[in-house]
Length: 75
Image (cartoon, rainbow, N blue to C red; front, side, top):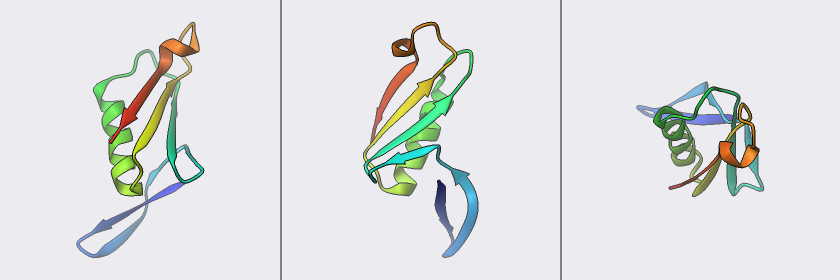
């Protein structure tokens, strides 16, 4: 889903793309990386602010157990 960005009153198209937005309430960002870092959490927080959402879920599929790759992010 494209995330709208306004910079100095102008819209920047395709600046960011969120993986999933569920029911207009929950942002889901999917990764397949060695480990989640603060940078990934910051990315989700940015998307939440731009989309005016309150909760996000960061999912890393590159783990043995999926529950170890989940991180809830609240704005």
